[in-house]
Image (cartoon, rainbow, N blue to C red; front, side):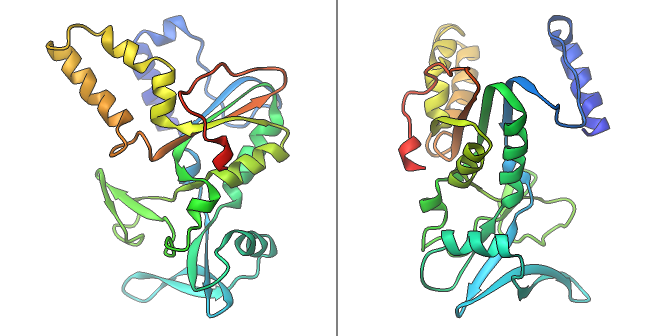
Length: 258
């Protein structure tokens, strides 16, 4: 919906010849009915969550205050009953704990899901199933900042310039999709999905392994597939709507972990 990004995307599509082959339309609101596939690639991690803390048995919410020289967290009593109920059902049973509850991300998936008449959703993001997301050892939450391709842990560092993100609770997203009438048809890693979709075949078609084009493509594929890079951290949630059926897209399925 950004006018600047729309202009840049249109220019890129025209330069690549895509606009001549494909009908592209930019929209500023969710259509009343969708027959097709909705792709959410690193969308949900950018939806602002609520930051909840349990300290000495009391439920609090991190707010942001101005100290006179800088921004800082300031706690207040968690008064939102829906957020409190979600935190109570997801947090570990004992101990002080801080983590994110993102009902807005769940609502977004539910809103789009209810508009899907036939087709599905493909959600790609970094995150965990709920049991891993709210692991007792992950007691400081997942919020991080990104600035010029560097990750840092201070959400108040370079305000307005730093990209703040949190990981996705894929169990909560799957539950929201189910409530909206969608079917969970698969949950896997990015590496498993790309291999299942034929990435290695595409790599082989680039040319001989000793050639420079192959080496460049192999390096890019390594970033996408390696467990030390994006291959395992990024997860993929497949959701179906109507009579549409997803083909077998992934090498392995982890739906049971949700």
